[in-house]
Amino acid sequence: MARSCNFDRQEKLILAMELFWQKGFAETSISDLVGHLGINRFSLYNSFGDKQNLYRECLSFYLDNYSFGASDTLLHEKAGLAEIAAYLARFVALQREQKYGCFMQNAVLEKSLDDESVLQECQRLFCRLQTSFTQVLQDCQARGELLVNVQPHQVAAFLVLQLQGIRVLGKAGEYELLDNAFAVLQGYLGSLTTKV
Image 1 (cartoon, rainbow, N blue to C red):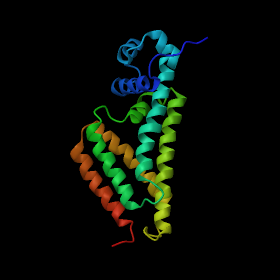
Image 2: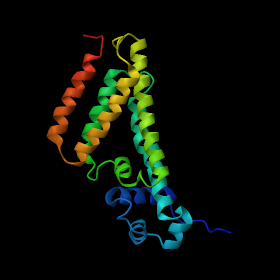
Image 3: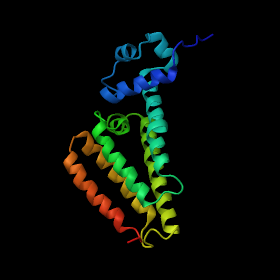
């Protein structure tokens, strides 16, 4: 019979996520995880499996509890261009706070070529963002708030692209460049509205 753990599994998962976020997959050893989580190797393997499995679980947790939670709050069913602009502004501001960049983008760059499950998590993020933006834009158009010649699916794809650029500039610490580019993006969004 498997022994039950005597610690909060989610708390340890968050600690592991923070360590992977800071150091990356390759630079995080099992010894690092054991020390950071404050559990022994047996408990680590018994609760999470190997390092690869723990990393995958951290990515999934990050998406479900950090990325999607933020987008669901702002890109709700009654959202409009103002909420998209607020989401993007919040995202830009977040880049100054995330010292180690975006956990998901770090994973894309480090692991997506050699780990299919990491690639699938990345695709899940991009698909969710594309779907959310598209829905908000379609709703805006249906309410007469968005110009009729705007293609919601294309604009949504463009916004997902912009998020990736924002992440890269943020990680590089190019905040002035980021602010200037964001001002252009805000102007573009404003040009799509029927409201004067």
